[in-house]
Amino acid sequence: MIRAAVTGASGRMGKLIISNIVASDGIELSAAFDLVNIDKDAGEIAQVGNLGVSVSDIKDMERVLKESSTNVLIDFTIANATVVNAPVAASAGVDLVIGTTGFSKEQKQIIEAAVSKHGVAGIISPNFSVGVNVFFKILSEASKYLGDFDIEVIEAHHNKKKDAPSGTAMKAADVISAVLGGKDYVYGRQGLAPRNKEIGIHAVRGGDIVGDHTVLFAGDGERIEIKHQAHSRQAFASGAVKAAAWICNAGPGMYTMEDILGL
Image (cartoon, rainbow, N blue to C red; front, side, top):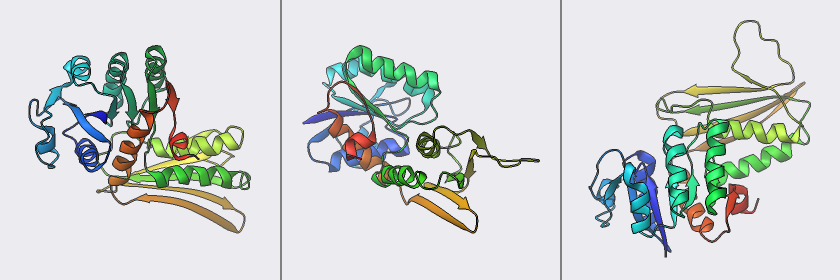
C-alpha cells in the first residue's frame, strides 16, 4: 500500500486530492499539512469521513513524514512554499508529485537538486490532467507543419489564480518553441506592437473558470485552433494521484507526465 501525504490539505485542491486518494485502490493518506486546521482530521475537512489522520503544522513536516512512513508527497500550493517544503520531503526519502506553478528557474533548480541529492523520484508538472498532456502532444505534432503560421497562446482562469500566464500556457509555448528551434515570447500587446515571428501569450482572469487553453495557428486565409478546457479540478486531482502511484515504482530522478502516460 502506497502511503501519500498532502500539503495544503485545507485548500480546494488539497481536499479534492484527499478525496481521490480515499477513492483509489492501492494508496492511502498517511499525513496532511497546512497552516490552518492543525490537529483536525483531514478526512473530515475533505468531507470524506474520519480518516484518523490529523492535519500537521507544516513546520513539523520532516518528523511527521518519517513517523508516518510516507512514500510520496503531493504538493499543490504556492511556489514560495513548495520550494521550501519539497527539499525537506526529499531529505526524508519521500518522492514528490508537484502541481504547483509559478516557479522561477532558480526555484525549480533547487527542487531538482534536492531530488538528485537524496536519491528520490520527482515530477513537477503544470498540469496533471490526461487531456492536457495529450494536448501538448498534439501541439508538438501540429508545429512541425505550421511553423510559418502566426502562433498565439490564450489561457483563461478564475479570478483567484495568482500567477499569470498559467504554467500550462507556458508549457504549451515551450513545446511549440522546441519544435521550431526557439521562439521569442511576447506577453500581451499594447500600443505600437508590430507582429514578428514570436509566440504571443495572453492571460484572461475572471469568474470561476477552471482552466481554458487555446493555441491559435493563423496563416493567410485560414487558421487552426487547438483547445483544451477543464470542466472541473477533478481532472487535475485524479491525474496527480495516478502520478503518485506511478512514481513510487520508478527509480530515482525527475520524470514528466509524458513518462507516466507513455507519450
